Image (cartoon, rainbow, N blue to C red):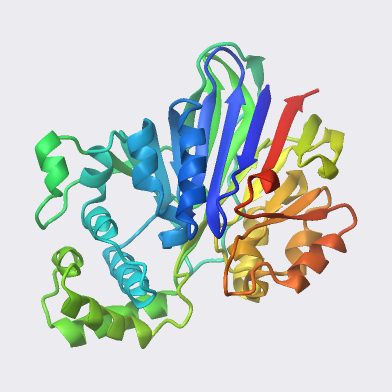
Amino acid sequence: MRVKMVQHAVGQGGLFCGELTMGAKPLRWIYDCGSNQPGELSREITAVAAGGNIDLLFLSHLDSDHICGIDKLLLAGNVREVVLPYLSETVLLASIARDSARGALTGTFIEAVGDLAGWFGSRGVETITFVNGSDEDDGGDGPILPGEPGGDGEGEIRTKWTPDSSKIDAHKTSVDDATAQATGRRAAMRQVAPGAAMLLTTPNALLNWAFIPYVHAPFARLIRAFDQALEDEFGTPLDKKALAQAAKDADVRDRLRTCYDALWLDHNLISMTLYAGPWKPEHFEMSFEPDHLDWWDQEVGGWMLTGDVHLDGQRRRQRFLKFYRSYTPLTNVLMLPHHGSVHNHSDLVLNAMPHLLVGYAAAGKNSYGHPHNDVRDAVEAHIRAQFHQVSEDRSTRLVVEVTSC
């Protein structure tokens, strides 16, 4: 088994692409596709699309610097399945209000959130899978994956959710997306429970590689308060889907912002982490680019992609570490949350990864101070790890190749 993973140099944003090869046809996946530097993002999307079809597109959340390149990506190549955190109608409205407040809202985004099945389906996506998360429980113990990896790995690589996914209605109550109406194409929609994982198989083998998502969900009390603010502003009964479509009107957007600003100073309402790596301990050879990051053998092989997850707060951090406690020891590469922001960081997360080799920030030109020097210093103080910044300069892209020994 050979895996090549690349954090592309798109600047202040994120575009990760992985490719796992066993036989003739590789399995390819992407995590996020956006940037505040559109030229660099366009360059890297073109390079990714040239590599062939995409099996899986994981989206951590709906911030524009994580998703603004999706339309270009879908037009440039085929994407089979999109995986994203479960987005209630309330969260979608809050996302519209947030982007409006930041001056990042686009008509394409409004169309997409108004009819996800139609918007993605009209662009060739077959399936949308929502990963549920909860802010009410203790985070759970993480997935329990069945069986042991092994067998003859030759043949087509397939994906399987465990536990199985359940189908949800792909239609919405308001007017369907116009493009979907014209093409008649809608993506199937399904959801998986917290703790679900995606296993990789061939006809005669269970591969030692999995995708394990974890959703940091909004606090339920804030969702309830935002719902109440919406009702106070727009009245009842409230058709949230119709309201999302009406957000094309500037007055509606201003009223949504009023509801939003009263509740959330922090715009990262929800974020989905993704562990991509082995689910049983195994030794791998690993090579890195840029070359100063060295070459290693007898390593564990995993990569943790964190989006904008909040790991600074004790409660969420404890849940995160409990959920991933079987996989943090298998992690060699960590995406530092929120472009290396000190407000999303915890040294305790680094300490839970004894085999960490690289902690990196996907951060280009910005006015937020990303990555923060304290985060950089914390990574360099780790017993093994080196800090790396992936900026808009292509020479900074992070390339890791993982090969079974």
